[in-house]
Image (cartoon, rainbow, N blue to C red; front, top):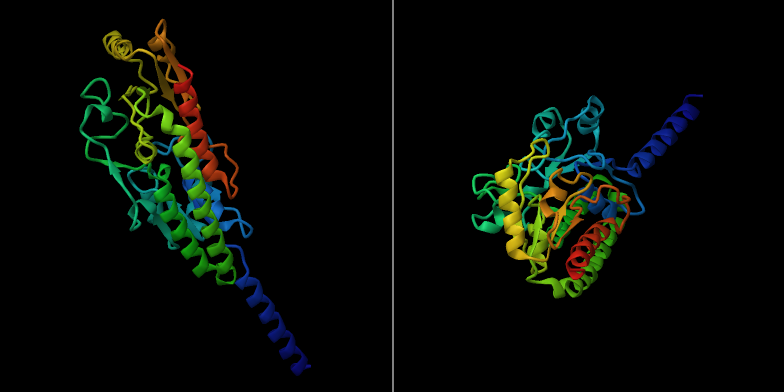
Length: 306
């Protein structure tokens, strides 16, 4: 009996070892764009989770108790960094497993908010959120160059955590790079005709994308969602629109600022949306490309219709 028991124990231990070697690595990202990049790398092996629900702002999200438990227990966690998710650093202090702030990765092409008129709100003393001149622009996922760096880091981490699937992660990374090459060509062709056309945004989130494709917003209408600007401020914004003429003003879903309709009433200006987060995009291998392609199409579509 003792010999049979020893064989049984050895066999069972072997099964557990095989199971552990092939166990799915649980990946959590703070925001949807990082989830989509991770999904490209994990394709066919696992599906990463995302912390923020669609429509939630990474600038001021309030964590639920279930969020805190997830943050502290997941195998691998990726977030932009304290310049974006200011609610996370305190919670991450209680985490013993890896947490990667991607804004610190070597090889990223980072931007800082500039001191010129394009980076300022209409009122020189007001700035979009905390986007002060000289501070880091943390919307770094909108650069395909940065997406490649992030994907390479995730692939490397997963290959260490799950060596049995390392070849698949590396193959997925190569496929992602190749798709980004093709996407880059499509976007350059799609956006070439709108270079130099003026447009305005309510949130200075798109500089990385603009820099990649030769675009530049004309101004930022910085308006806090909970504060209705005074008549003088609205008049100044309308004067800027009248000066430019035919143009588009882009807000971000899910909410359009309350003054938007008033701001453009009677002017040759169209209201449209640009989605920097792609909150409802399925977590699939091609999700990241879908977000950038929709961004380019929405931007060009409005400006071409003027």
